[in-house]
Amino acid sequence: MKLLKRYPTLGKTPREFAMDPSGRWLIVGNQESDSAYFFRRDPQTGEVTSDPKKLTIGSPVDFKFVPPL
Image (cartoon, rainbow, N blue to C red; front, side):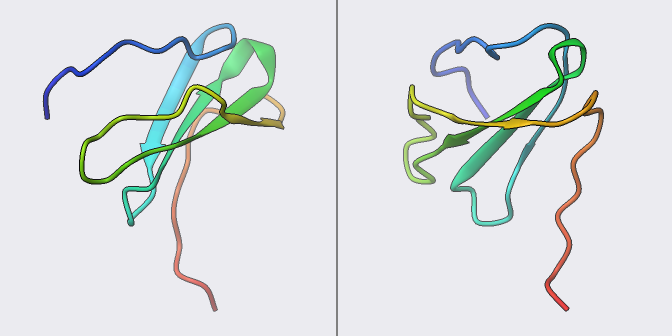
């Protein structure tokens, strides 16, 4: 890993982040603003997009990826 660029988490108290197994999505949870943001990521370069998708969710603190049933 290496630092490419800094991005705002778009919320208060960033608590958790995770990358999906494909490396195409970076998810950031902001505990005190009840939000999670999904940033599209280029697995080759590591760059993330500047237009994340927002999910309103109560106090996110952890993300787990599980295989579909």
